[in-house]
Length: 290
Image (cartoon, rainbow, N blue to C red; front, side, top):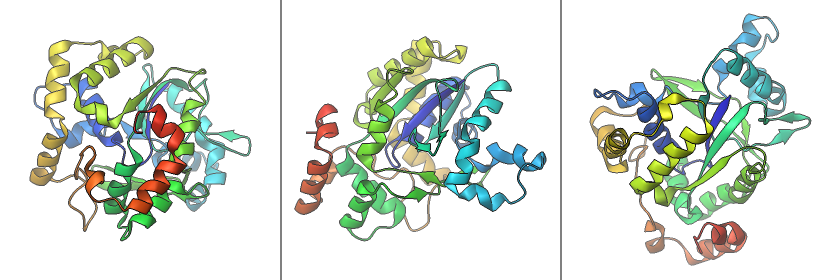
């Protein structure tokens, strides 16, 4: 079955992916890029290659239509599960949504999920740099908009793969969508701000040890500490400067940019802050951002 690593964009998902892939595929001689991409993203175009190989679809461009692609989300997951004896970890920015009668996931395909949440006032600035927004209100509108789809790409061996367009709701609806499943399968909600503490990483491994069927997530203290140290945000940032990172965009300071907590306080516009806090008040209070 599938273990989802989910988050709204620019909320720490790649960092968690680095930590968990290093732990799962642990080696003393560590290669960041060769390890992190052993945890893939879903959905990706190569998950649907079988449709073309079996002549079920002839026009690959159709998969860029979220409504059309949604028919194959769960069938593709079931196919992957059938071909794997252990749980599969997938990173995703998708909300567990429904298009018509087509669900993004089901309890039959999902073992458990880890959902990362980050202070939206901080996400605002990460989005600005990642998507080249010139104004804070542009980035705020990205947080607020629900009726849209996004195209996310991942890099495998530096060959950029385009994903199907995914419906991406507003920041609050995204997390409410995942919360709606908490009584259907186990979900650990993880604050980005807490990921800087080893205790949080330990709790995450223990969650996977309890709920996944992957024996690689049996907790080992020394192993966990080593993984946590070499995947600290500053270490990833320095590694990117030295060897590069294939998900980095041009014209930015790098994929692993600030990784800071509360740096928004010194630069956010008052009107933008007030609008974000008003719109997201309930969830921000629940996760102690207010």
